[in-house]
Image (cartoon, rainbow, N blue to C red; front, side):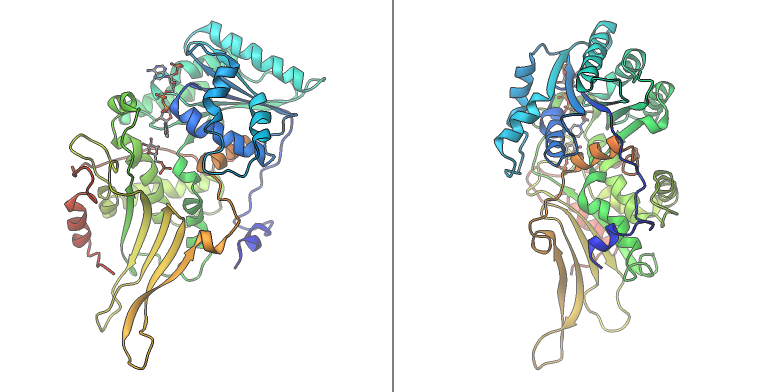
Length: 441
Ligand code: NDP
Ligand code: BG6
């Protein structure tokens, strides 16, 4: 069934009932001088702008940080990152987008800075419309979590939406959400005292990746998988993450929060939940979260292999400084009773080059009757030529604007094993695979 048929179903399990809103939309990027803001947040906003999701008649974007720079200096810092790997947008789009971007300098705990920020937001709200309109204020905290509580306090006190005509104030927070259970709970309660849950968007950008988002559809919209996706048929699941990057300029962050909190307890655990959970009653965020929580509480002990498939080096870098970049989910089915042959395996490659393929046993072509392992292959570049797959951040920021919390969530447990820099990973990975009776196909 083609994807268009899904999107045309108005009242199905898959449909999304968000209503498009209008009114002034202010997007405030706090920590605008930092790494995430320039590499991910502003480029995502730019791509949304190019696709018409951020109409200049409604939208303005403010960067905020302590660094003292002018509007133009911020624009110059981010300009080179806007296009990313996509070169299709003309340079006029870049210039037009940058005209929407302004900068305010201030600290993360002073009334003065946030009063100034509020004044700037209000000024732009008025200038976007001659009459009073609803006001939507999205605060994106591209900041270390240590400053979330004070920033949230300042926003609550000085920068909330004040329009009588409606709108909202939403806060996007980045992972890691604390350093351990206690600090995570403290952080949650500090932010929870200031904002209601529907106003808080805890971002995990893996939940915005195309093939991660496809997991629910794949699992629950295909009769191929519905009766088979259980422990009677699946022998083991591996979630593999590796990248060539090192900590590259983010040493301070890694020193403070540690490498495990960077990838495992959030990105990979979220993927795990989507692989392991039961079908939710609907795609409503609360139903999905209910099922995720159930899978976390009931299935983690049986699925330790997942958490073990990403490791730390001697100097502590989970999945980093390896010989290639790859993130994939491998679902390996049990042996077919009878003659020994290769196992069926379903592989979902999140990156690079999004793909799904299924390894199966077929007859070796030719006169002889023998079997061979082959693949049914769905490579996105070939199958969906000309379709641009959105960046994870692009999709998640759009969800925030639309008030859809389906792809936003939380944190959990971890495990450490050292490996050598430049290697394909720790030898224990193979041992664990063998223990879980993974067979090379
Ligand atoms: P940065 O270290 O670049 O910090 C962002 C900005 O915050 C800095 O420009 C600085 O701005 C301010 N800042 C830095 N350290 C402190 C501090 N100790 N106290 C107060 N302000 C500080 O971080 P990133 O941009 O890399 O990350 C921001 C958030 O996003 C983090 O939570 C991170 O985990 C998360 N994240 C980052 C990713 C990335 O690729 N970078 C990917 C996914 C998530 P100024 O001094 O001007 O105020
Ligand atoms: C981020 C981590 O959350 O995810 C980085 O902070 C890591 O350390 C990155 O490199 C990986 O994301 P992606 O989308 O490149 O796989």
